[in-house]
Length: 213
Image 1 (cartoon, rainbow, N blue to C red):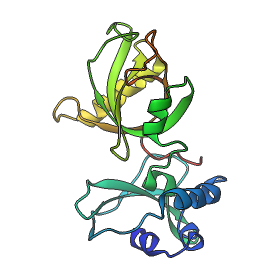
Image 2: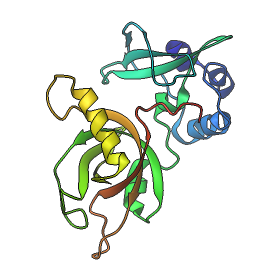
Image 3: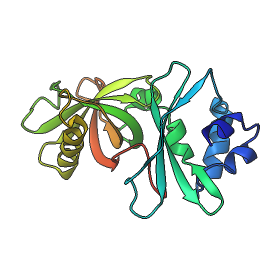
Image 4: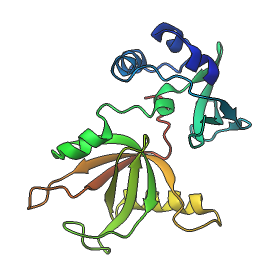
């Protein structure tokens, strides 16, 4: 499935291979126009597919893959009457506004982004109190930019993140990273700068998979 998607020569061919949500067609065509279609670069490796509990309703499989020398990533596949379909948005880590541009604008609007998050302890400026905030270091899915992100310590958002970190550690080294989708908002401080610090408004998804959109 992944190899077929990477070999596809047109948007129409790619759309035949992916999970369809109301936004998929428009987003895929716009993404290919702005970024170029995702293509195969070098050899591709796979691990054995495994069942997923990401969505209690949709019948999903997880497939770990690696393109060339890139890091291992996980593709989400849905079983359908017409065969397996690739979850395109998580596969390309779709975003409406590129994360570096979103960080630079820091205009107080919020955006949902697929990030790799790690527990951190950087407390400064408006987020100076460890007692008031949980701090995580986030890197966007494409590895272009990092920021410090904060959730109110007593919020359900902070509690959910702590549960996910605990699950990720599973007896391994502390501060294991997690792949999540967060709604972030950059707010400028009194000096007019955001200092690469964002408020976490919501855990949109506990993975890079967004369900039925």
